[in-house]
Image (cartoon, rainbow, N blue to C red; front, side, top):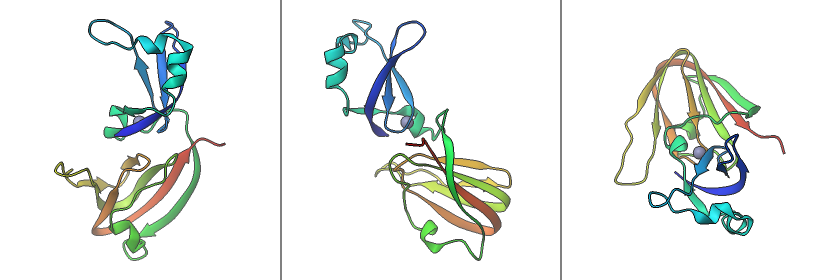
Length: 157
Ligand SMILES: [Zn+2]
């Protein structure tokens, strides 16, 4: 998924790490001729890249970033009380990760990727947790009895 750069820091080895709008981090290494990112070595270069788009493979894999706190929750719901809006494609806002937790039963979960790439629905059984990246369209597909909760994770301002 496309994110934007929000800041930079250096790791223990002095390599530069881009902080992204999804709360993931990604190394930006200047290793010519393989990777040319000389700009990351200067403060002007880094500043010029604040807000620049960047691909986040961790968001593609729906990995919940480290260091977030739970900001709220909705539910729990069962198959009868589940809001119908969750069955249509919808997305969590920027800066908010969703975390779907299934307590009992099962439900199918599907990311709606950009065409023509489609992502198969996956069955979430009791005990399953599905992280949902900010801005990623997704929907729930009923699969019988279920009890689940939706949590919202992020950083406190
Ligand atoms: Zn990410």
